[in-house]
Image (cartoon, rainbow, N blue to C red; front, side):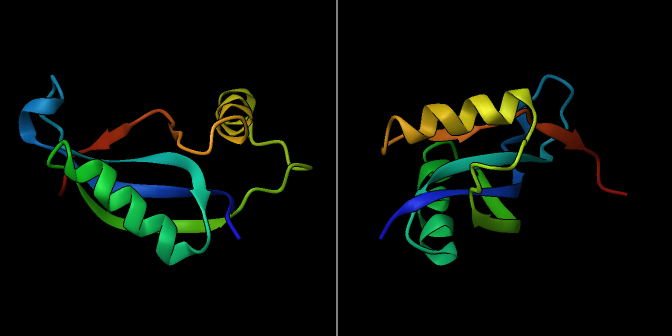
Length: 98
């Protein structure tokens, strides 16, 4: 059974995708999935369209509607509950490797 999941995804983008050239980063991702493995598979397939790579997933879990995830993430969650095909992407926070 699919449920709405949330995770923090660390990704590598194409170098030209960010104006600053920082192509590593992380973001919250919300989507319908049946398991963490299903979530990862769907996310990898989605990001492959942009030549982005999922480096890791952290804190992948089913969304608990009683939790307050903050205004932006709560909105993404609400929108995802209304559309089973939606992949909600939060703000991308980039960083440079040491």
